[in-house]
Length: 300
Length: 314
Image 1: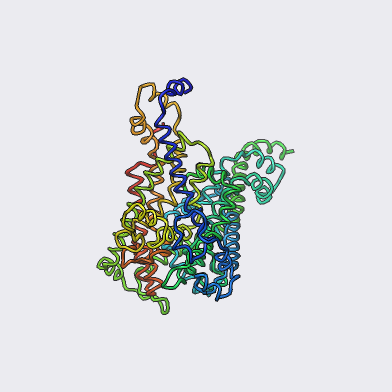
Image 2 (image 1 turned 90 degrees about the vertical axis):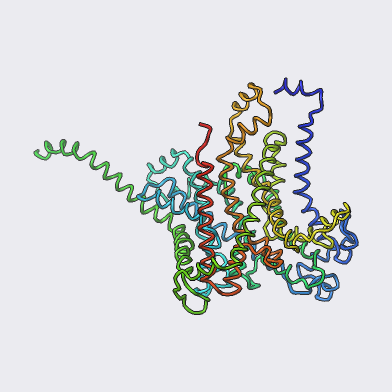
């Protein structure tokens, strides 16, 4: 390698320059829309049309954020180009946090229990049951969504937090698969030593297995949380009521509120930014973990 | 003392039996614990996957408008679907979306993965390219809806500076589907590139060394070594992205809602409108059974054709 790089030194390495140019292009295409989102959110609606080209906000204003959080009066909002419709992103933010946290915590925990039973306990029919779980990965979401909607409706749980979370609480086939792989690769020695000491399976699981599985469970929880935070279809079916409306749904309603005239672009971008920020924070904190886990887990 | 003389043979005879009984017992004890451990997951599986699957198939043979009881009508829904122009339109639109999405996404992802693997090895670059994937479909859709706005969207501003005519990306029948596919490519390219990148890293270095000793060119190495060895990963990526693309919904729902006219009424949008717009749950269920069958066939054909579960490495 080193001799090769020495010999190719003299002529300009166009391959390398071209490659880096492509990388920079990909980065610009990826990052620029986010900057544009921020730029628009900090602009004021009336100046957007006349000032389209500047990278800095057009007529800097925090009005869009105020509007999103309900800090403007209806008159102010309409004067700023908003729809004047009531929108309460604090509430949606709270709902999204609750929905994503509760479903993630339960799903990861119950999936870990099942994954352990599939990886480490010996019982008749184990592999067949596991195959059934895996097979559910093939079922398209819309296919079960219709009957699930009917069931939630018949139970009288439409527009309740229970109805919103129930289908996600108990397991995901991907999570079971992901954790089973990890449990199978864990060394058996510690568990066996504990078993000789007469420890019960439950105690072994909670005191020995779980503490050793913190890393993969964090990764999995992160992936699950992001997925749940972004969920749109199920809340659209069962969670239209304002009291449990999540951010994704709130955003689409905010967009459709805009009258026939010019949409409230700055408000919309401020709202999308608010919805994206928690994910961006998580990403800054755990980005490396997420990036490397995609290599490890292969396919989600 | 008779017991004492009797004891040893009995003990030696019993020993293996007892140990297998102990093992059997421990397997049964394991079963009890296992049932406890898989109980919550079982509820999820049965109540929210298996039963709905059966119920969905049942409903597809009924007429059901949510208020009364489902009425059995045999295969009427299916015969109606095959004569339904909107269904065929939805299939055509979805297929158009899938093809554009897959071709661009996979080609760009392979390119990016090669760059990540050979040139830009920093995790930060990989993380940055993954960013759009982590943001909700709804957010991505709204962001591009704004950037691609006909009047004052930045993309059309750039287009008009270049002296070209503005494009109604979401508003014209011919552009709507390519636009939605493009938005999806933007969101997924970094993620798919990471999957391919993981596959590239699994190819042992010595294979490349042999190729370079043999004097193979870069292009030759790529087509004769990298691509064939990447096949299992690509097959898996292809299956997952194709299945995902067939179920495109969020982006359409937030931007065009199926329009203009029927230009973006993709199959899941059509199912949604039938069920929740027209309360025709029987018809919607039949549509989703058809979607299910198509996806299963696609996955089966792809894995068979691309031999995705076999590797050329060993």
